[in-house]
Image 1 (cartoon, rainbow, N blue to C red):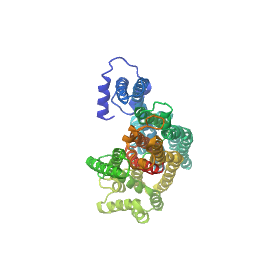
Image 2: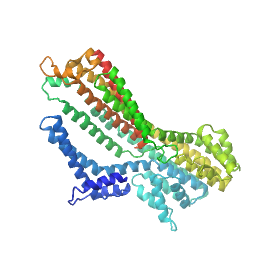
Image 3: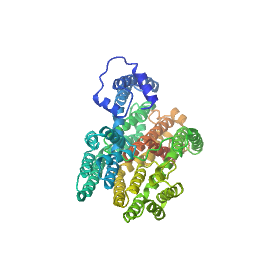
Image 4: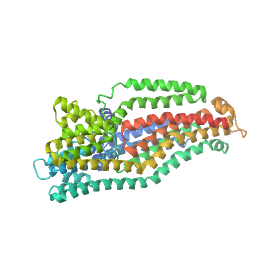
Length: 586
């Protein structure tokens, strides 16, 4: 936790001085995420924040003038929901981090296996696997290696005790790696291959099972969180005629508060059950290609929001400019803010793209007694794309600075100095080891190429297992949901008396408010209805985009922010366009 959330939690906790009894799960979650806050402090802060949320909900609900029974229900729901969210947040954060950590399990086992191919020493394999990455799983292994240094054991045993219950395949794989150190030379290769097979098959099976298991919950989210609420918009005028007290305030509470909160709760439930994730490389804000200029995002978002609001005022109903301006402005600001990080990641992925071919070529030539330095230079000429350029840069560093292979890649001005790719950096470290071992390391490099190909195929298969579910959620957030919402709003306006050209031209809220239907029931104000549903469409775009992106790639801030930045402008433009098009027909 950063300093600001810690200070806020401690400040809130002061408002509840009575004793509390936190659960053991909460304490373990806070310890795992490295929080400085005690479990008792989180429990007290949850109670205080829940009370404040209930008070705020009461005030807002009274201002919307719903039925008298609605006020205590909203206050109780907000209070209890906020308290539970605060108490459950550390466990959810710990679960998300474990999920992201376990996504590194195949790569960690792969690094250990490759080090064992070079030298059959489990202690050095464990140290190599831990030191060539900076993810949570590697940091955990690093701590176990430090504890066993100077004593018996490699650190794999205590490490698997910590993580084996959550991922049995990781425990089996590392036990095989540990046992391979004492196996005869003819058996060692088969044992290491079985280790890689165990972790990759275990990951693939868990993701396939998860993909099949979430079909039902995802369908429920789609049906009850999107389709049914949007379909009900069209029958609101008929409900008012039938005497149902449908007011703008009640619509705000249902569509803009209750439904988004339910979708968030369902999303959190799905995230907590995701077995592994394959997040993109982490890019710190200190990276030289990531400028520290937040004003660019603010200026870009503000300009885009203002321009889109002006266009909406000219071609769309009079109530749309604020909605379009805020949604487009927020989306563009997110895109501008996260674009440099996305560019760095795209470059890292491009470097990894042909890494398998490059390693295979280097390994074959090293097996034929060619020096690693010469093999790297020849591979640079034969491999295309960013991978070949990276190898060419390393080869030039070798010649000009007279440095070794590892420094040519990972030194201060090395070819991979600013490439946030643990896979590529681990490869460079192994190339450095191969330059010391000579020809015997050639087979290890060829094996590494095969293992990297397996890991890349594993990630593709795992993402493809979720592609149908996540694709449906993403298209619903940006296209289908807004399209249905706009059509239903136009239909509701037509049933309320704003049909024909009036609906297309402006959906004028004043005319709707003043008039009445043939039965004497005043129609629902169309401007307010359009804004309420429009806000729901924007919230839907955010929540479903976060859900689809998180299920497929993990909850990475930059990736989620970029996808939300694309989804928001698309959703609001589809929604407003659907309102205009359907209003001209109704």
